[in-house]
Length: 157
Image 1 (cartoon, one colour):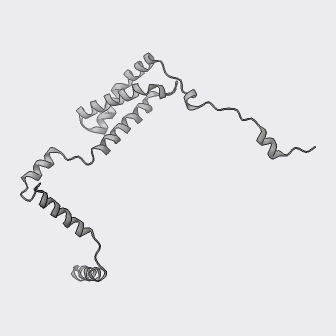
Image 2 (cartoon, one colour; image 1 turned 180 degrees about the horizontal axis):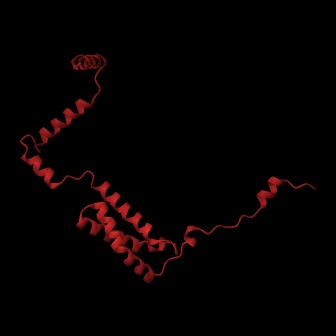
Image 3 (spheres, rainbow, N blue to C red; image 1 turned 30 degrees about the horizontal axis):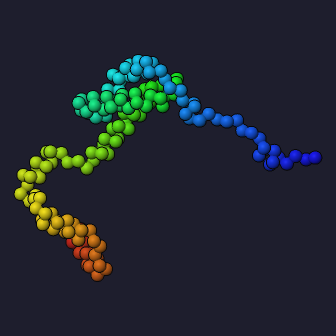
C-alpha cells in the first residue's frame, strides 16, 4: 500500500509556536527602574542632540521615560533597554514634529501684523482665497498656447 506524500504532510501536527504575549515576560518593576535610571543621562543627551533645545530635550526625555515605564511589559526579558528607549524617544520627536508642522509662531504672527497688507477682514480674506483658487485652475487650450508662446518669446537668450 503506497502512502500519498501530499496527504501525509497534511496530517502532520505542527508544533505550536508561543504567541508574542506568551514569549514576552514582564520585567520586574524594580529591575526595570534601575535599568531606566541608568539610561536616563544617555537618553537626555540624545534628546538634546535631536531637539537642540535644553528645555524641550528635558521634556522629551521625561516623556520617553514615562512611556517606557507604562510599556515596560513589552520589553522582553534579556533584551537591551537602550535601543528600545532610543526608538521611543525618536518616535516622540517624530510625533511632535508632525503635530506642530502647521503651527505658526508668535514671531510670525507679529511680523504679519506689522505688514500693512495683512488683514483679518473676512471679505478681504475671502477675496484672496478666491484669487488663489483662480490661479490654480488650468487655463483653457487657447490661453495655454498663448502662455507657452509668451514664456518662450520672453526668455533671454
